[in-house]
Image (cartoon, rainbow, N blue to C red; front, side, top):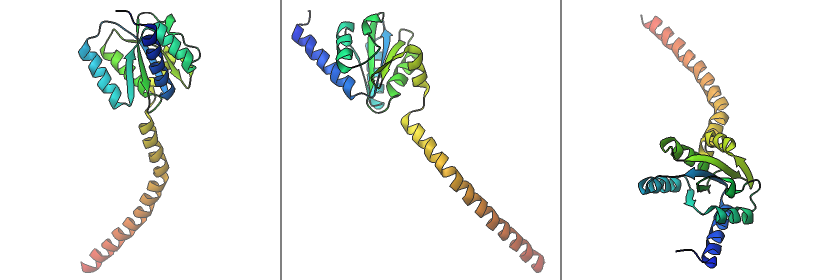
Length: 175
């Protein structure tokens, strides 16, 4: 049964709210995947603080325009469009769809949005290859900790050397 104008306006309002709360969004063509695959994708999205949904392209175009997305028109995409929005970090929606596309040939990244600006499929793929926010923070902590750790090892090496020399002197005197 066809949706009424009010139902369509409600759908657009919900999608606009999702877009406004999201840090990034990624779009992919989808066709021919099962409900089990869709449920697995939704579960994975929840783990990554993201959300996936499929909306008619005309409604998606209205929502993206109302949300202020520049340089993107979902009507230009071919096929059904799966949208992934990420609330936690900027790369999780792109990573989610890229991982899903590796196991499902029916999924292909077509575009994305970051900070309200449209991204091409190649840019979304590059975004998906970036480490997550947690990984970057871990690398930063390791980088900041490296000089301190090195200094402690140098100081410990001197003390270790002194203990070795004192042990050798003790062994020499007792022998």
